[in-house]
Figure 1 (cartoon, rainbow, N blue to C red):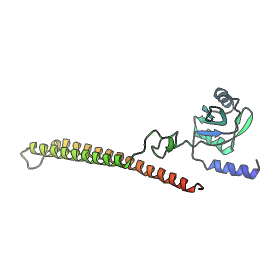
Figure 2 (cartoon, one colour):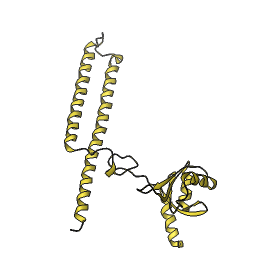
Figure 3 (cartoon, rainbow, N blue to C red):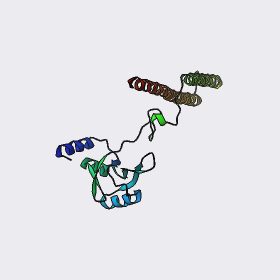
Figure 4 (cartoon, rainbow, N blue to C red):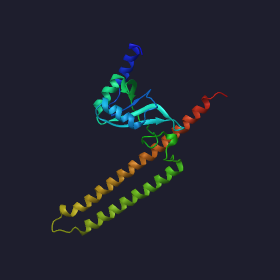
Length: 211
């Protein structure tokens, strides 16, 4: 590798976000995870786990993921551009986990997401259900408010604070429930947007194919 290319690689690695994991390439396929972990443990402090990558047929590939106990060790290796494995310098880069834009979980793409996309019809059903639930919460709170106010009789024209406390607690509960419903609705709408994005991407790919 030329000094210019190596400098460019190191600059790219240095700009990586802090991480405890990295990916090493050009690793001998003859070394299993146990041997790799043992070898790395002799040369580096805080090696936690080693994961070998396999192809679709289950054959080992020359890529491994290495997890460290501390970020500073991993980042130092990434900045250097390589890691020593079995006496050989293997190129490294920061580990970037797969993120599904549909469910926002790691480990898979949206095309393999176990969470089914939300249809417009199902979204409307959820909207109606949440609207009904919210109306029920408001009506229940109003009923309790009126009941407790009617029961709050004192010699003064002012209602005692202790008598109003349960009402305020109910109001807080209603607000928290409404906030939870709002979060769920945002997630549902986000799923619809992602579904539209998937459809648009598919159409664009089909149009880009030569006829």
